[in-house]
Length: 337
Ligand code: NCD
Image (tube, rainbow, N blue to C red; front, side):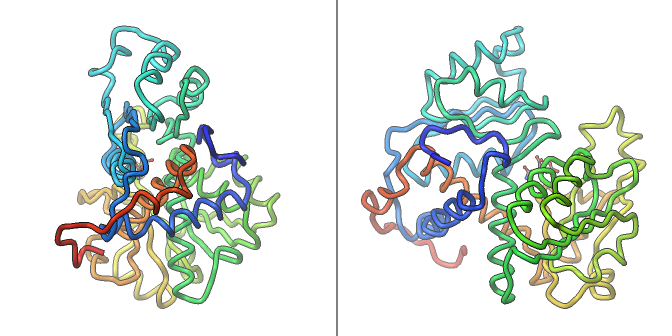
């Protein structure tokens, strides 16, 4: 695809070569994300960051990524702080705000809302999550992490064995990740969820059409025994009609160090899009895994900055100019990465 000026709304728009291009640019962002070099390639550019649902890492890492390229960030968070609370349509908000920004990152609780906004926007829009539909930048950072974790183990994305665990019905990160995996070959996927929270049938079908082996299960221990990656997810409580309904599923599948030791192959990678629900009744990924070197969750969050920098650099067509506008950092930066 031609990235310059494009919206990023769904992983459906990517071919394998596009994903590889994003990853190649992300690799080149490391000196900047890791604070060895500073670039001003986006000096003067403005990111409109519009998050109408709770968000910490997606919102802040989009902002940081833009800052790291030298650009500035304008934030709107929550409907209550926006004219949408006065009845303004997405169309009008998009027409207005796209006059104030060079690119927009947006999260909204309604499926399809970000695409509707993008259709009215005068600048490129990146989907930071639209309801339970998609979260393309998260899937890209997850796949980038999978690639780098597997490279350290002598593997790749082709022929990957992965278990996805938890709320596969409402979890937009796993929807986008499954679709992205369809661009690769011979993947084995075990989908572990309560029956009511299964992966949507059309996505399962798409993976089978791509030639992948897909198993569905309600048994955690047996499902994680022969995989390279366990990708755990939170019960998406905000998509249920009540907390009581979410409570029916919370805590159903818990991965902790004891289960990991007894059931996983050595060096199985543990992933989660975060936030993990660390309350006692949930704990889908226990804190006792924090010292496990195969816990990749904070490598995922670090990688999110690289991938989002790559998306901005490609969309704003500066990927080949980043190093020309760079210098070394002046301040102390050792030990963080
Ligand atoms: C995810 C999301 O918002 O879909 N979080 C994130 O962006 N990293 C997952 C979640 O909220 O459970």
